Image (cartoon, rainbow, N blue to C red):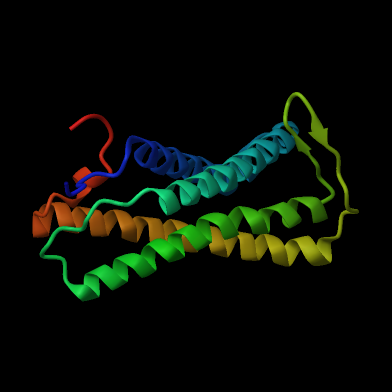
Length: 176
């Protein structure tokens, strides 16, 4: 039987990771707008979101390696299939890369991470000549990730409303 939808686990991970990325991105953009006493907590929460994104993305990749994705609509051209594959690979790369750049950025800022029940104390001395460029790279990579994700959304909408191939139903939440 042909599979037309991603599994419930794949769909849940997809939407959870998307929501975490959106939240981390908004916090990253607005951290300087918070009152100064709250900034360390906001940065810590942003870091925890990044770590959760890494873990959930690795779980999703593991799930993807062991579970066949649904077939693309039969009329999908070879060019669109290749572009889709490349875009998904780039998305996964950036989803992992952005928070992985954030980790050394955090450490070179002389910060640790508070998990609530335990803490990882600051391990490195504050080193502005390292964390400033890392912060820039982290930010540019985050913008690239969000731009690619918006392109991903636009492609899905194009499929749904222009090509009318019902592609969005593959990742739609809820029963079908």
